[in-house]
Length: 259
Image (cartoon, rainbow, N blue to C red; front, side, top):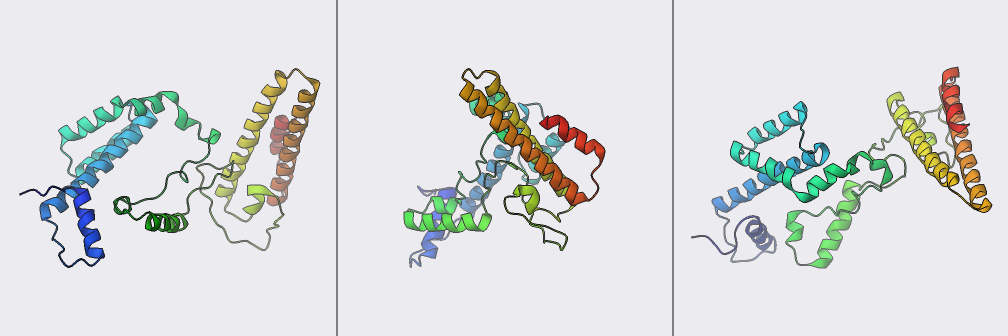
């Protein structure tokens, strides 16, 4: 006979009873435990379908299709159910809206939303003690290190690299100065992202200057552009000092951006 409370909620409820040391703890039926596992598996496949639909609008690449097929096979999801999950994902209004807006291709324009989403396990969501939940969330935040917006590297991980003797740290040097001595690949990625950020800011300020009416606004925007130019020149000096042999082509490229 099925219990009134079944599924994942029932499993977590009984686990909570066992944790609290209740004397009359009931065993979890194997069917309920299996159903809980299946809900987790189907939820994982459904979430991946929705994410892929957000990114592609329904036109999967060969690699993405293979990932879905492999996950379907690993999780023993019937083909009919897998097709239904994908169809439901592509027909979802929110998923279609995200895909059509192209918002995921403009990540640099937004704050990183990872910190805004608390890491809360299903077991904590079934716990009615708010104080315990707040403590758990604080501990989980410290454990997982939520992404912080640094206005430069939205989806580039910050790799901690040991300082070297040749490294010269300067206060206010930004991401480039803080990562001297890093492997060349990471340094180039951070450099490119920093230049892209400054270029985006210059484009925005230039548009404002173009449509500015008052002389005060025009002067403010000119000063802001000069500040960005100085930042690019300082960045170029940092790069030349870091490599010890900057090519002439690099100087020309930077000069074109700041002139």
